[in-house]
Image (cartoon, rainbow, N blue to C red):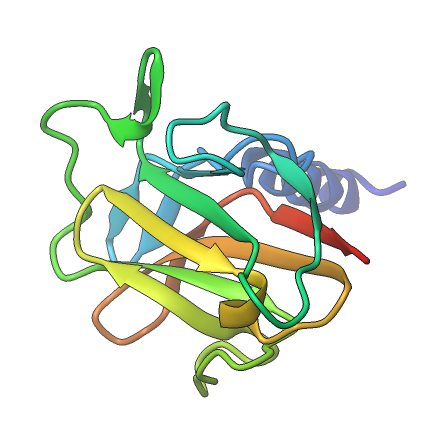
Length: 173
């Protein structure tokens, strides 16, 4: 292999490794270039069947029909979560200026669609370092089966600056 080609291949490999390939079990934490600045933190998305936890990376819940919906809770934290309080950002944590955190679901169900997020429905937004949402199988508008959630950090233009780990719920009959 010519030396110049080897340098290009090694450079491309280094770029892929530096981009923070996620294993789906933790938030993306590698720096992301955003028009000259860098986003140096990530989003952790967790959920629970109860308001106070335990916080999990996925849930399996019974799908309610008619009557009372099955409620669950999602929490996205920008930066690091406070120890022993996974749904609390570290004191002083702030989103980058002009950005918003969004909670989105797939399939879209009854959630509003956004042109800048094809295939995902908007569930909640936050201008803070924490995003907490109380949801249910009725709110999601999706039947039994899997549903995936993600939190994204969006710049003022709507461009994705960072994406959380995926969070999945499997609804059982």
